[in-house]
Amino acid sequence: MNTKLLILGPGAPSRETSGLGKATAHLVTELSKKNDLTLVEPRQLGELATHTNAQRNTTAFSDLSILQELATVSIEAQLSAYHYQEISHTKTMEKVESKKLHNQLTAFTEELVLAGKKIDFDLLYAHDWITFKAALELKEKFGKPLLLHVHSLDYDRNFGKEKSWIFDLEKKAMETAEAVIAISAYSKKIMIEQYGIYADKIHVIYHGHSHQKRTKINNPFTEKVVLFVGRLSGQKGPMQFLKIAEKVYEKYPDSRFVMAGDGDLYKKLIVAGAGSEIAGRFHITGHLDQTELQKLYAIANVYCMPSFSEPFGLTALEAAEAKVPLVLSKNCGAAELLTEAKLATPGDSDDFADAILEILENPTIAEAQVKANKKSIEKLNWGQSADEVLAVAESIL
Image 1 (cartoon, helix red, strand yellow):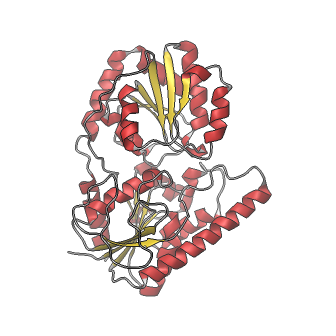
Image 2 (tube, one colour):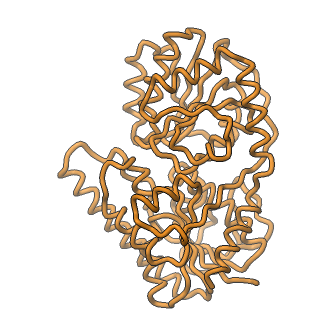
Image 3 (cartoon, one colour):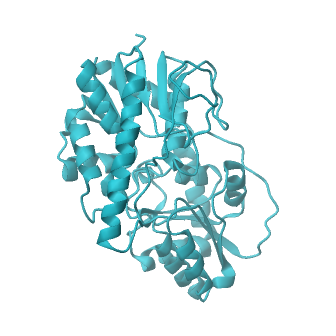
């Protein structure tokens, strides 16, 4: 069955789209081998060839291999799916930023809907909140089935502190859609308990994984390296990582700590790190491309993910592939696949530090976890994930 898909995406992989852009790009690549599709996404967030209107073009993502042509519509936009973790310190500024964001979404939606009206499609397939408003309008106009792929929720980004208009948009979209894809059982549980979505319409489809050869590099450090990779926002727990690092160093001085990523808390972390007792052992690299990240994985002795709410966590798979033992948040979807990874309680620095110390002090435990993790991910691939997406799509036609 060749279903014509209209895919509303977040933009190709970049520092703005983070894991969302990477996962969507991999899925689109695989889906393009099996189905006719048109991809509509923001131009300025991606790495697409330059085009300014709704024309069919061949394109390629810089770090992915696309084996056949994609029909793409590139939209001018500066909207990011990750926008508001650390917006401001005052309610007045928060309202101003929220209104600005709402206006950006409205403008983006108008362009998406205009492009969508010119495209022949059987099913709408929308990724995350920045596309949901347009998806709802296109569904209302054309009466076509709607499939949502939810990579991250407002609940995750605010780690349950408050409900915004984005929460309401997500809830309405999930209620309206014929089917919703969650990227983990953990995320599905949030959809049911916090958003009130019926369990029967939610399908768990795990991310795939791109297997790579392990990078070899001369380690410039003699100490054991504890690594954090991710967006520097409240959701990911980067400030928590600094506290964890201080506790680990206190008991294990032969250690060093590296943070790779960019985000709202970058400057705050620079200042906090410089003022810490471990300033000489705490490094922040900023955003790194995949090649540079592989070099970091190659020298790491422990990977730490202290997220308060992590729907999946692609970097956990990358670290596991690189044979780095893991300490993950208990609120992490990837832990459902990496069942031998050590888990710690979000916000509990002592719990994380103890788990890291156990790995650093016990090579046998570290080696056993690495072996188990590799076995857990060896059969993961994006082709299988795409097949599962198509199965859900065809079930609602």
